[in-house]
Image (cartoon, rainbow, N blue to C red; front, side, top):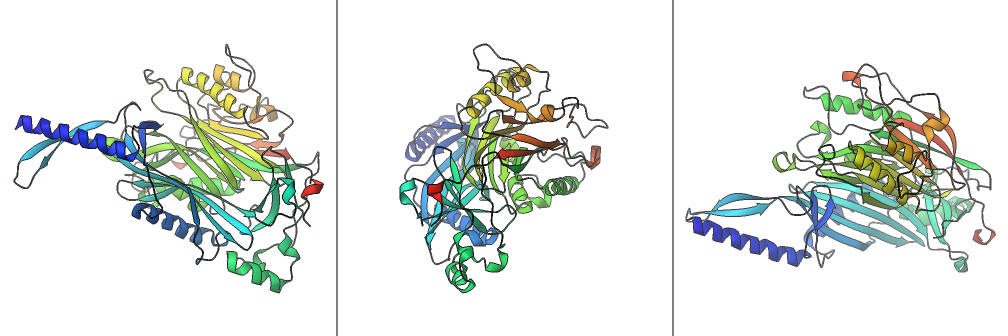
Length: 522
């Protein structure tokens, strides 16, 4: 019997190896404690792919009916990728465990399994109608229990009616912040220079012509449009951008009774809605299969329900260690924006797994948003390690990444370090590490309030004692002036706190661009 069990294990391991080769060969590190396997030959007609694409379309039609054309038009599906997620303790090999199975005759066999976590699907959907290109990008997570959650949803509309095709410009339609319809017209170059028309051409149309042209496309009628137009930025003028950094304390609650988490989330929701930021950078955002009470296990889904006017990107940093025995639990950071997110990326930061203070993988999330009259603004969000060593190496990685982009760059995060510590001295441009370039970031709080301690942590205690939450901007002529920086505090402490952190807010003035003569609409 023992020999039979080992033979069965050997056969199963060979089967696993063959499946891996068919699916895409070797495993790759995806994020903390997760290996991914890229699936080869993925087709939109695959039953599982077709299901998630239909889910994404239904979600979009319900949430943003004006951003998607007539249902009779099928989208073009591009950038389609599928990957399997497999649990790992060390990001090198899957975690296997022994199990037993019984065949029809009642004989028992030993079997080796690995812990699968579900699948991730990435894809873009594009429609074309009435010289408008509707572009939506998604990342969908499907758990082992077939729960579908949208981790990324970004979109924009692009005009195909280029009045000056030789200009080399791409023409985009973007929404006014807070409105429910794309009304403003912008042109962008890959070089990072931007120009803008003064009004969306359909506002000049007679109402009958407008209804004929657009009512079939977006579901938005003239009643939702404002008659005013957006002014063109001039050199030396500024546009305000209100931003927030907030650690939301994942799914914890000081109250251990049923309903305690839901009550805390109600306070958190009130704090976020009251802030009304244009861009929100969130830390400690979770998917936790066995928690969430009536709000569900996926916090980015909950947040997107609260904030329907925002696009969003959620990037897990680590699959938590309780996953094998309590169910899938992943934590990371998110960026939510009222302005269109045109692209996003992430960077896994340094980790020393032999250091007991450095048990969590950390990530830097980047989202590139388009702000009318300004152009591309690069948003970075992170949550740094409890390890001094990891923080000092991570801040160098962060500055190196920020320094690669052109245009305004803003960095947010719970950095788990106070201003006097070496990592923060480096990031604030006050010190250098051997062999590194000095950071060009400016600490918004200390520049605006040099004599104020700016404590944001810990609201679970009677008194706040630390400043570990930050907003930085790159201090060059491509960015910003500080209009305001403040810490909204509702006074909630202990059981009445919305989170263990207070949010940090800033209002920045970004330089606008001049309208280029060759980009003016005809």
